[in-house]
Image (cartoon, rainbow, N blue to C red; front, side, top):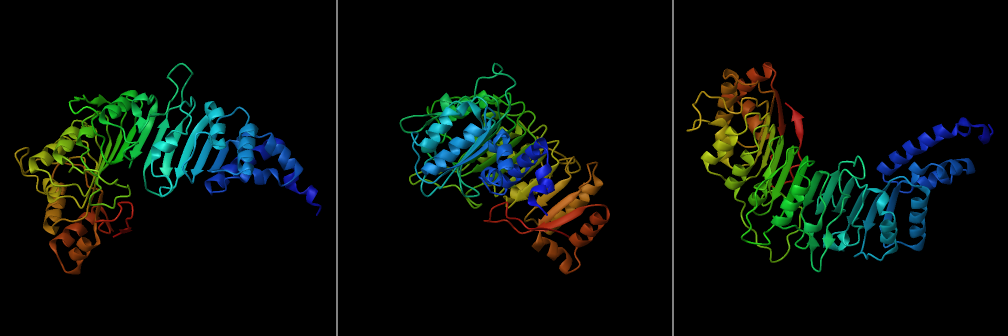
Length: 456
């Protein structure tokens, strides 16, 4: 068959255009950063079609330091993408310079950047603020930004922004300025941010408590997810008195603490909060570097729970990983402030968090009063078999929502069935009633995302 008569050569330009866009997106997701060049070198017809399809060239991949050929390729991508918005993905291998040709090109096209991600080697570039100083400050159409190490978990700044409806509805987004020795977060225009992650930032890049309040205040009408991991912000002024910021749209809150994050929790008032995850980085594997000379202060967990309980009226999911001890009355008050809780996961927590759930007799409720009446999913790593059995029986006899899912350790599950036991009989009865039971490894001193589940 004559190759020129193949069906692919008879495709109309508009269909070929759509296929190019779809194939290019799949190739990029698979790690082929220059697939657009491959498409344009198949034949003259495909090259003509690719060169008239700006969407094929909108994702620009840069490795710095770049060769002259790489710089010319980046310039070609930016020219062939026309006037549409672009996505820039940069891999930094050495300490960058704002005068490098790659960053000069970015600055020239900053008004078109829709997504910007910068990945760097933590071995060769240990201070994030050096890289921030090379990024264009004002990007009016930016929708997402990521500054992270190449490791799966490591220091990162990440955010998503709601698209601007017009040029006048909100000020254009601006990254923080770089000062003489650190990042000036107080100059950051945080308006329109919907998701914000600030994880493992070093001393030069970490915002102060006053700057954190400035950031949260700027996005108070749009922020939906906030994640802060690592060392806590410190006060610029020890005498600062910072009032909480009301965040009406905030639904997801993640804290991974290495020292005291309670003051940061005190800045947040979220009446519609739906999910809280708190992890103790001193017991879980810590992926974030700790600089020499850093003073670590134990987290004031009772104070953190007191702050968070004010936002617990609509809370549905609670995840606690290796959290330190608290007074029993503090935990009782915290649980009592969560009437809508649907899911609770207690991984290697102090016994008081389990006792407050399994042995609820206290001054705040009668023995027959239900605790967490809407609870339907429970995950627990270590507890006494009799306490778990008593909880399951009480949960069946109280006027509460039926428990749908129970996750326990393999050890507890095996102990319930190796020999006839009360817990085994209770589990059989609950499973017959529709309870789904699963098991996982005890996640002590392993990352919480490395879990193994199986249906029991």
